[in-house]
Amino acid sequence: MQITVGGQRIGIIGLSEAIEATKSLHQVNDIEIKKLLLDKIKAQNYVPDSRAEDYAQALLKAYKKAVGLPVDDYEEKSKGLIIKILGPGCYACEQLERDMKAILAEMNIAAEVVHVRDLNQIAEYGMVRTPSLVINKEIFLNGRSLPKSQLKKLLEERLG
Image (cartoon, rainbow, N blue to C red; front, side):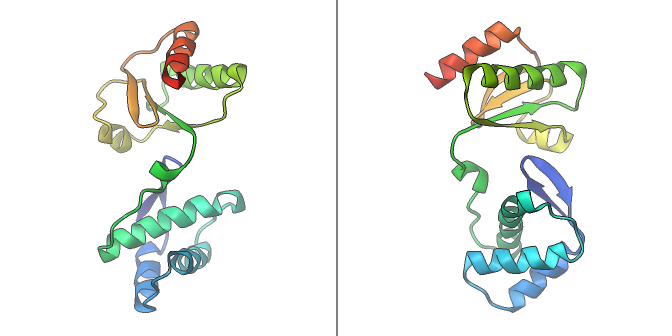
């Protein structure tokens, strides 16, 4: 099975079994469920310590979907600016990512920049052409890139 961690699809060995084992313990506390799932997954998969909470949130989401509980989307609740570059990794997509990171650094703006390369995830946005730019779930560019100066202006307008 796969989960989405930080915009990336990641295959997890033993996820179905971990969900079933956790389900049988009848845990109701999200914190306990996350800990149990993460511990079970770490036994068979590498989970970087710096990303443990992101993995735990993604595991909890998978667990809730599997047992039919309402899913509270972690990404929607994360604070701040989330910029996604949608594209398989062509030159234009990579350049858009570099430009956005440079603009953010130049403007001293904290943001999470995620490059979504998985075509299935890109399709979820309704994109058929790349590169595309998504800022806090709002599509700003679809199938084209802009010069760095215009990207900066776009970001300034978005942030007010």
